[in-house]
Image 1 (cartoon, helix red, strand yellow):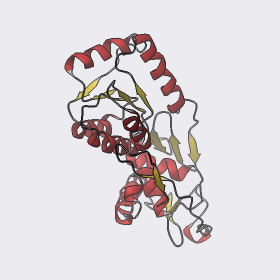
Image 2: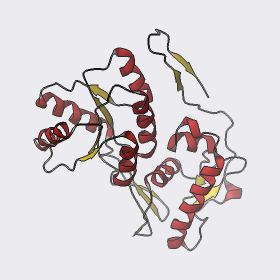
Image 3: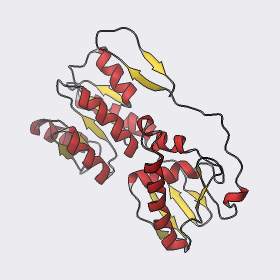
Image 4: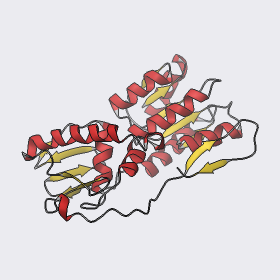
Length: 259
């Protein structure tokens, strides 16, 4: 559990409370959002608890960044958030906002409910030829050999493995893994795919055998049978996600737009 911007006493209390439900919880306290993001990427936690200070802007940025590299639910613990703060937190990707003064049994019940909804405990491993992608353990194996991948590399493989031999556009991959702000950074995606191919290629003997280029724009995960020339054309009908355009404190208007 990564705990962000919590005082030492609060972090210790949270460990005691969480220990009532989950024995020996590992608590990673972080003084600021910058160190918290590093901790999230390094530890791949099951839960992220944020105890925000008065300045909420860095918290919103942290939530967006954390959700692009981890599937862990993000929960805000505070009694000082007004309804606009809570709306912006939810639009940034937060899973819940809970009162910091709620009784421990309620806190545990709400966190347990969030984890039931968000943890892929019932997801079966996806087997695509020699490749296996396990959403539960967030692990990758090729021909039975475990392949060490970063959280973002796993997210890339997970997105591609949803539909083998079906091209996924650069934009869709960038939005799914890094967020809408990176939807046009094709160089970032190209480098990430190159590193991922290198890791998978150590076990297949062919760096491009599993992740193949789609004609036009995108990549596809091959199940071992399809080649680049055999992949269908990617549809130009984009399922562009809605993105939160902005919410000014004091305004009653929520502006949404499609990228």
